[in-house]
Image 1: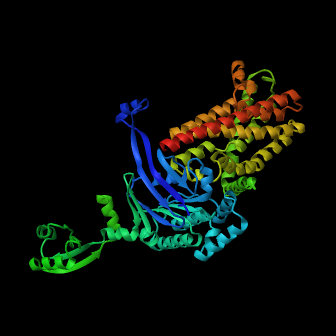
Image 2: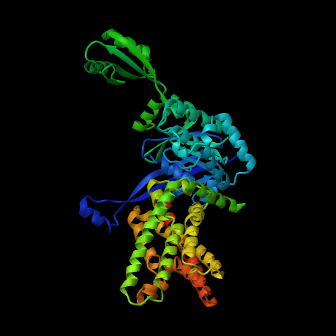
Image 3: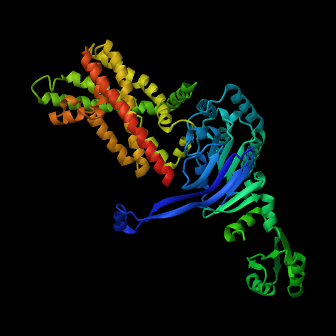
Length: 333
Length: 267
């Protein structure tokens, strides 16, 4: 089966007016033709298969939303090719819309003043969902979450968590091939986050829906995504399995020790002893990022014990968050 | 069934507008105040001239015309410019663009529900009250049919103008000024605030070549003229139809062009 989404050498450039400062500058801007070209997305390629959950990550302003907008057909790529379910999204936006669902974290597509069920009924007609499919879908929703109290509650009276849940259900209602979730767990409490994750996971499993998820919450990534794609400054940094990512940087562990004296000063001495590793200190711990390919944690610990009186120690596995942070900061070498 | 998805939007619009009962009450009160102002304003205008008939209209004629124009305004004005502008500013428009319905139609049908409720809750009661109070000064006959057709065309023209102005918001990203400007121009040049019969001659000529008079003047003329000649009916409705098609096409093309700019250059 061909991939559901094909992105080939896609670049997106924006023309941005160079604004000048001050009142005089703003008047001059009225007639200015002084544009600069900003490259929001730079030569990205990827294929996404039906049924995958892909975590699409990157720091703020990396070009994530731009890529998603191109996939949904709201933006047209400057160059390169995108195919979504066989359609060119920006040319067949309306047709493409039938095949996709979207949830943008902060915005709701639901009818504010009305009970949720009214929004569902309307979406049923707009997307021309057959009665039986609609009933089946609601049946499935009932089995996944406690939606009965939500259905008859006006959307404006819902908590943020309930609304997000409802929005996700609304996006899956017409059984789209692909659902784009843009920061779905933003601003939610821990238990709601896990509910939402379970729901997304279950919907993906039941309907084999492809899910593209952007998030800043590594908990989402760990819970849902097998594959992650990282972009920064418009360039693709990483596209592979999450295990592979950990393997990539997994030879690093953080050794934390506590010694006598002022830690920031003692950290300098540790640094002198371990010139190969990065050492940092805060009020509680001196942290050493140990590259286990060069020396094991035990070796480092023994070496430190010979010259320091270690009071306490901790060993931290590197988390997805650390890896991503490292990639954001240094890139993949 | 294709029509179903549009009618479903009408349906939800009706339900939604019933959610805001208080708003309806306040609107009715606001209109009453406006009509009181209109009454005394025109009373003093008629008192200041010697004759009973000014520009071919008696005081009663003028008042009936203006009351019905206000009722028509409540029913036709849908503040689409506001809605578009707000959605553009907040970015919610992206969600609307991702519905499997063309945006222009989506917006129109989203409003259609409020047409229906406003028709029954403001226009019809006003119309009945006016006919009863004036003891049959409003002719009831075949003209009602012409009026109905004319109003539908007027709604479409009005929407197209709103849609075009709303599209401008894509460029300006500000709404307030543009909307106020649009409203003043439309209300004045359409004959909603002052009957076109009162306009000075050169302006009258200009106005007849503009689309605005097709919104309020045309349906009201057909309604209040008891036995319009076939020629009047055909020219009035024909002009409306031409404007309707023209403005719709213009709106469609302008939107398509603007949206392309946006998808190419980003918003």
